[in-house]
Amino acid sequence: MLATEQKYYSTEEYLELEEAAEFRSEYRQGEIIQMVGCTPNHNLISGNFYAALKYALKGKPYRVFMSDLRLWIPESRLYTYPDVMVVAIPLVYAENRRDTITNPLIIVEVLSNSTEGYDRGKNLSITEVLVVFKNIF
Image (cartoon, rainbow, N blue to C red; front, side):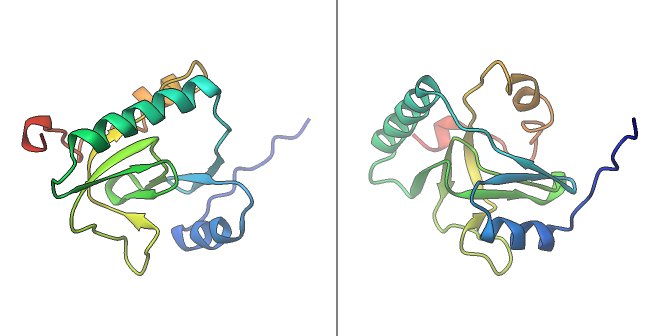
């Protein structure tokens, strides 16, 4: 049996494919990884985080977003869709994009058995993003 060669994409190729895709995908250092659907529990937990943060930050210069807003982390060459993000105003967009931000303060990832290793490892080796809750609340 022959092994298939892994195809690597440029960020431009990924963004072009993502605009036409029926399903969202992450971009991890040249690889495109299709995102899987979530369970009802995953959705409830994400929604609870969103609601609690939205309520706690009411009237403050921050916005809370759910999983449909893309995040670009250039240092890690990662495009991803966190479950919940808190972003300072003004939003800082990735170059020439209005659907991708670069300035999250808090990233919430709800762990599952299938994604925990990745979410605790490569995905959240995002040391560039420092979470300091007391500066927000």
